[in-house]
Image 1 (cartoon, one colour):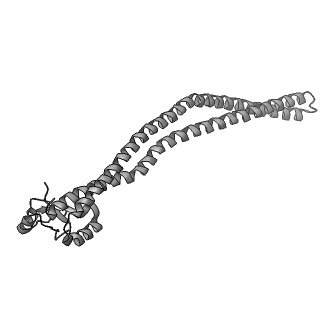
Image 2 (cartoon, helix red, strand yellow):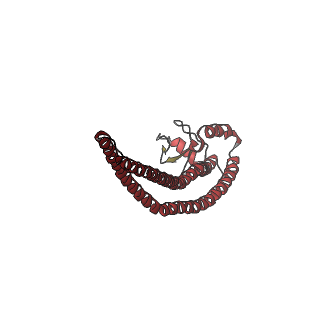
Image 3 (tube, rainbow, N blue to C red):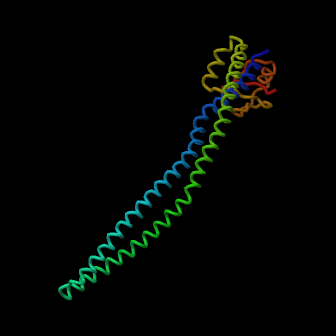
Length: 233
């Protein structure tokens, strides 16, 4: 490789490639968490379904216990009618019997509604289970492919960084301090191609002399945006 500008052009490409690879590698944990979240949501839906079913069954059971107690209470009142000592007592017992039977009817209705809900939710459990299994299988497939891709990206990054080190070593010593200062400050954005006579980073037009210097592979820094300039291939 000859000429600082050629080194700059190659370094620009390598540093951009390395930055893109590093960004993808760094993003992997976040993407992984997002994919795991899909499984977690299905598992949560299944757990919620099971918990709701448990509560529904308990509610039905409690109402059945209450209904049995109410029937017993109504029977007790009806038996007391036989020994009522006055019309007032008889009427009071009749009122209690009517009220108790009304509560029984409401409990029976609630029990039937609850049993229907239990049946409906029970029928949905296989669907919830399948959704969990599908989500886990999909995640396993995704993770396998993603980790294989991650391994390739890490290998490519290591290769790119090795080539970058070799490329930058070819830069003349007299330009190292300026190069290192700009690259340290701007990273992969430290470089700018010149299109025609325009710096593509800041849009500033360069002089004819500067263009000739670039054509002659001279080390050139944009006077406006302080980026390392090069000519595209």
